[in-house]
Image 1 (cartoon, rainbow, N blue to C red):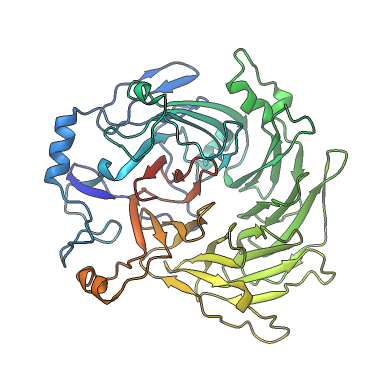
Image 2: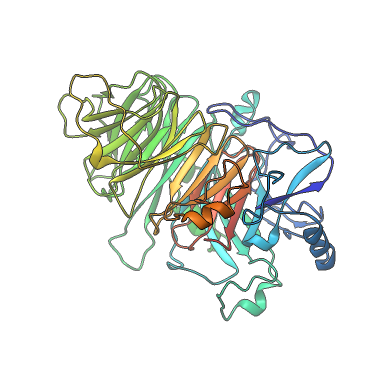
Length: 498
């Protein structure tokens, strides 16, 4: 949740689907790291490799007094005058600051250039981690000014010292709790040079045949130049925990450059069921290619494209349960389901799910017949693929979603199912918000009366997080409830509600 506080600042409009934000104020040549931001305190320690900073440097009494004076979004007792983040207009001179009592963890960080696409890298620190301070690894692609294209890079990042909020009890404890109050968040970064902005980046890990060794971590980066670069970032990840490691120019070179596309694109996904590496890429011409890693370690792109969309490919995802099946979402308003074994290279299913661009989608990992989609008109929906029937040569059908929400009034920019709970969905939108939803919530008549005063706020809405220029989000697969979102900066947070 967020609350209003009086503070001078200029508002920034929402980021449309392929628009790029203004550049941040950076030096001529950015260094290899970002910085954790403290909106209340500008002091931080830094050197050439590591930046440390607190999240909330104010005295507890000052912060608590402000929280007591400012109202959050209390939907239980809300009336017609309720302030709704992303919907209600701020008064002149007001900006939003987080209500820290609603977060279990909250950290913000900035990078030399905006990173509008990123992915979380699975690590060897264990699953279901609840110990603080937390550590995580991510990879992101930058969007430098067009006249500074050579400043672009892939940023491989290690985030450590991610402490929980002061006063959070949360039912979790660890031997490290006593040390948690003294830790500062640390961001370390390794850069891989690029000569073009990143539209989308995704990671894939190939298990090592030696159980004692870490997996090989690959990235696929689809760039504004239309080229797709595949890198091995395993040396960069290992360097964080190996003092004195030096990344060589050879290790920064791509393993493969895919030049099949004639237009830039945004559709990129690695198959979760093909350990060696099988990659989908889709472009603004509506063309989709499959690239497969060979036994010898090289990559081969099948030059026979999958075609059928009449608009740009906005999102591609492999099925989490069927190795030959994938889905694509397009600006033509359809989602199409394909089988790579098809000789015709045409879709098996075509469904018109929106009258506007379908920007994003997410396939549930727990209930694999469920697919969520988000559109340019701000509506997001959940579909049961078992209800979709082959349309043959007839016009695309328009199925009925099993759930749909038009709470957001700007385009949906990212959507993702919770990795272990198929009732929880996270959504990012152009109204500068990240929202969390619980599809299992159902209200009886009495509860409906209690919430009648909050107009257009569905009972399934769990939480609203303010994220300026919200663009992409991902759940951390190994830290329950932890989310990372990006826009004009990164947010790493966990709420007390999930």
